[in-house]
Length: 454
Ligand SMILES: Cc1cc2nc3c(=O)[nH]c(=O)nc-3n(C[C@H](O)[C@H](O)[C@H](O)COP(=O)(O)OP(=O)(O)OC[C@H]3O[C@@H](n4cnc5c(N)ncnc54)[C@H](O)[C@@H]3O)c2cc1C
Image 1 (cartoon, rainbow, N blue to C red):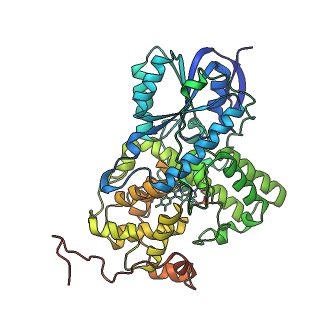
Image 2 (tube, protein in one colour):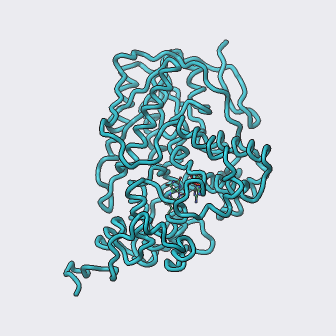
Image 3 (cartoon, rainbow, N blue to C red):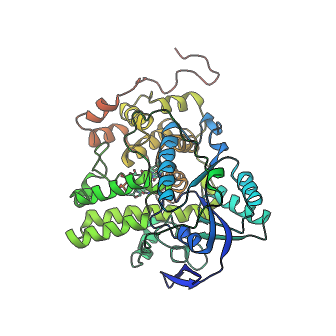
């Protein structure tokens, strides 16, 4: 029978649907087999399927502020994820084609040369990713295009109000969503349609250099393992007290890297949390974890609603901050060579591992905006390069929040760095572990016209 899964009254149901002789499944922020409704839909509608991931050549080029979009840690994490995805696809009779170049050009060529009838993908809230989707549809009006939400707890119709608008503050959003049930994960996919020509399009170019200091490794099974491990401990019961720790592996879930590239489904995670609460009882800590998932959710829809404003200096408001771009100060911040040991230690942790705790991110972001008086966007761009859990919505919206140009009704965050160090690293262990860096006494070592200061 010709069947497919669709969202009916909030649940996935089986309905009749059209078959396509050849389709593309375009992986992006959904690098998994488990709970992937978009892939499931492609698997029931396509007779032959080409599974594709596009390595965007633009990620390698230096962007504004002299940073790349895809730094070394993030690239490794992504490649490890792709490698595992390829293995998982092979177990389902498929394989992964990794295209290298400009996504639209690469996909267009594939559509033409392989005579494709339909393209499936997961919805992506990133404005450029949406633009790519739109361009592809405009270039191939005769093709069928199907998109499904797999990166969020809720469907767009649940998360956004009737006018497709979003509450101005997170607390209003949380209040509205508190009685809504997140979508359940779907059943595992047993088999995928065969590939078009496996030997000719298998093209997985992964790095051959060994992984060095990276402690969190990419891949769907590692993400699921980390989630199972976290919920097999009593750590969730203490989350509220521990979540601000700078360096303790069980202080928070540490699941953001897998959630960010979609190798872990957020709906699967919510179900695991729910199960933990059923077995051990819900408390303030476990509810707080869910609240963090709602923050993530809020920022996803925030990115969707605000589009290009996510990257604008004045954010979603009209007035730009009184900060600017000082290359020397920015360099010092990136290198962990500021007058504040706590900032330097956090930046060293980021530079060495690609990860930093939420508290650490707030501290270094506040220092960049308030102490160094830098354009918040250069900090966001550096995080984009470095973070293994980089997510367009979570990153840029959190930076806007700290800079006071985003969803914060209180207008930005300014942390007292000494107080933060005393509160979150009272014995100085974190600073000792990651190094206080080259602590400089002055913010500037060169003046505005690049003369070294006395
Ligand atoms: C300046 C700045 C930039 C950030 N950039 C990113 C980013 O690029 N990607 C990213 O995933 N998170 C980002 N965050 C949010 C947060 O710091 C990380 O999600 C968190 O530290 C990840 O660790 P965890 O998985 O242990 O989180 P937990 O504390 O265990 O939280 C569980 C999950 O909830 C979500 N979450 C928690 N806090 C937030 C938040 N403030 N905003 C959005 N989602 C949240 C994450 O998916 C996280 O994995 C940023 C925060 C700041 C202040």
